[in-house]
Length: 113
Picture 1: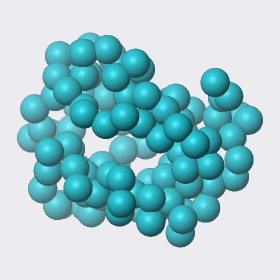
Picture 2: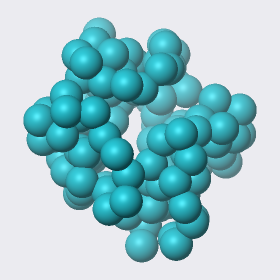
Picture 3: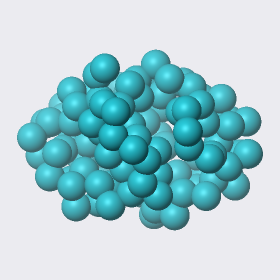
Picture 4: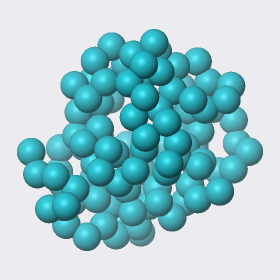
């Protein structure tokens, strides 16, 4: 598995399209928006896993205590269930490095509070 340091540059416009087709059914990025099946991702970067107010996380997610940043998201998005064993997230991951880099670029831009 290549690390984020070796990832291709992300394109936020392409990442937005990937997010809308593969992530938006469970997540929102808008400040003040409610949670869906997954938590609202606004303010994601620099936040510790399992700490978004008002969302019921799995014990595994809370105990992982990872700080979300580009590198951790890149690894997590490859295979969420492998990255956080016991997570309730039912998503197979984004296998293509370019898709992960694009989604991260979009999230970095769209979730800044």
